[in-house]
Amino acid sequence: TGVRRAIIAESDLNDTRLALPAREGGLGMDAQWSDDFHHALHTVLTGERSGYYEDFGTFQQLGKAFSEGFVYTWEWSRHRRRMHGSPSWRLDTSAFVVCAQNHDQVGNRMMGDRLSSLVSRRRLKMAAAAVLLSPYIPLLFMGEEYGETGPFLYFTSHGDKGLAEAVREGRKREFSAFGWKEEPPDPQDENTFSRCRLDWGRTASPEGRELLALYKALIALRKHEPSLRPGPREGMVVRCAEDKATISLFRKGSSSATFTIFNFSDKPVSRGLPPGNWTTLFDPDAPYAAPSPAAEIELPPESFRVYRRTER
Image 1 (cartoon, helix red, strand yellow):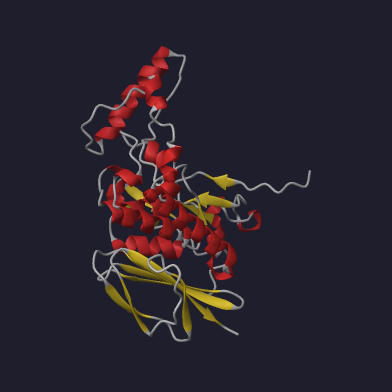
Image 2 (cartoon, one colour; image 1 turned 90 degrees about the vertical axis):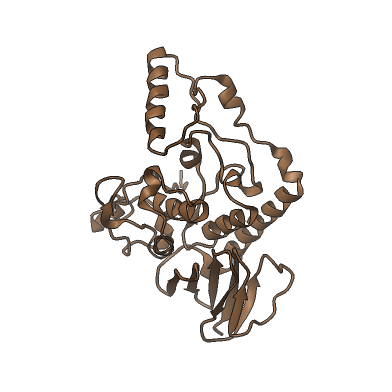
């Protein structure tokens, strides 16, 4: 039919062979999910360290997720109790799909709580920026674009009573690793499903409109700035300053370069720009101003900015 189809692996194996071409011994898929990116970002934003999050929590891991796509590239995983992952440098950034939320990571929480119920508004914006300004393919979870606060619970409609009971008991055992004390909602209860319906009215609230406008602006930025799109790793430099909780991402395109800097700390920080003449491409705290910045810039707490350098 001539229709181009993309095949993406929903895998947590960190196996680069999934996306390597067949001529290099791979399976030739177009991309695969990076749960590592989600876990590294989630732990930095929320401070959670239980369950499979015990493998994450350092700021350097978030820097590695930005740089390499995977955090575990054949390192010891305490949660798995074995070595895990494979080196990812052979893959272009277009081989990774990243997110701050998805149906697994929200639905597998006992109470289905979204990120909007766990962190502040500024950290929600940082999550959006981290995903949409990463060098990878972003995946957005329904409702995150306006800050949906309703839960996304695990629900089922199994006709087999034995299977339904096995699912209930299995989920209770799974949650014990996280130390959650509540009683999980019954997956078979229709009310569990009903509680997950999106509240589209939130898009009309001031908070919903503000967050939705940010998502739209960041998506437009990716679309119109070539150096922000996924592709080869050439011309990409990631720097992680753990003492300041900042990550900077330099990316070079055919005719321009961008420098994106994230301040994840609760304090303002000063950072220098790379050599060259830079203009502010995007500043969510001053969306209508684009002055030529000084060589040294100051970022407010929990903020980000994007700068652009013209090559010719």
